[in-house]
Length: 264
Figure 1 (cartoon, rainbow, N blue to C red):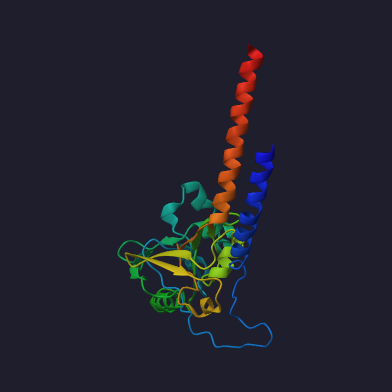
Figure 2: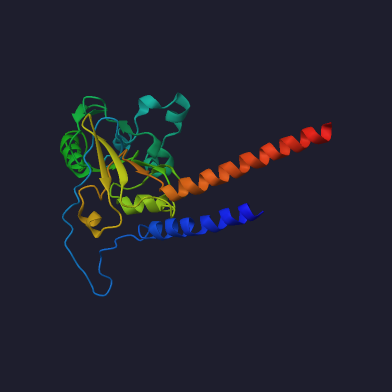
């Protein structure tokens, strides 16, 4: 018993030291002044550009309401029953958004009567203008709204709810994405968050520091489609988890021995 108490006493300063060290890295934006109003111009945001694999939805309206329908639905993807159920104006429903246009490996989408149109490398606003110009020969006063349907962020590691998140907007920040995952756990390393980004056939790995206000001006503060965030746990979590695992293993072993003794 004396040895057990001695071991516990020795563990107290170790755990205290680990907790103190870990807390220094818990607060966000530690170098940001809180005693004064700070205002700065946003210079690091750039509109999202489309690339192969993106799924976009179109909302085409014109004075030719019946003709609009063929552009708002990719009818080749519908069954005969579904196609028969489509009525003019129904493209405004949430259900219609599942029928989008996939950007192929050449960076094109294919529209009825128009054919292939290059959209890779363009923003959704630029694609809207491009389509409005092309549709003028087919429709009267066409207006086109373009929206990405599969904007997704994956968040892994030491956060409350890791997973993949589909986001209904093209402008999302790193901090907003982590909020969707319930924020980092207290044991998550905040000054070394890994961001993995794939763009134009290249994969980029970059680390970001959430403890510094410099993150707000980082070129990686605004996320892109299919970005992956990984939050690494610190050593104190590994220490605690190892201790818990060891205790559970010892308890199971002790119970197993007791079962064998009673059986005899």
